[in-house]
Image 1: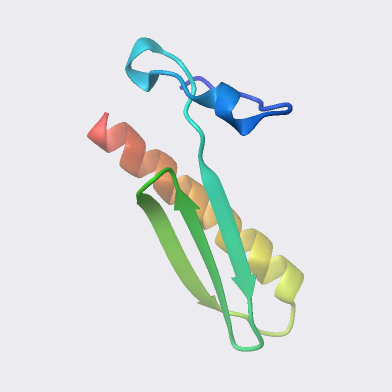
Image 2: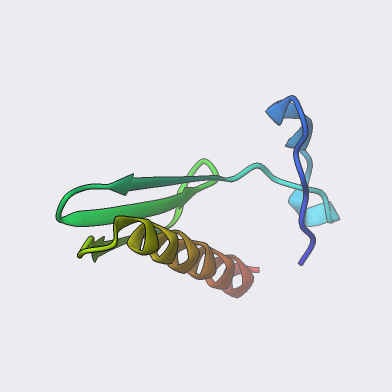
Length: 80
């Protein structure tokens, strides 16, 4: 799997993924007092997760982020 690093204009990432180019994805995290949610989006939702926030919101936010990214990669590879 190829990875791209965007510096500057996000529109520069618009390329054809089928040709080995890069695509733009967005990840969002919402850490609430009871539930932490994360989503990975590329125009459609690739993955989303909700976890109980617990006593360490930073740790839960990082865990939700990594689990959502992992699920998005698995989904993308499976749909290949």
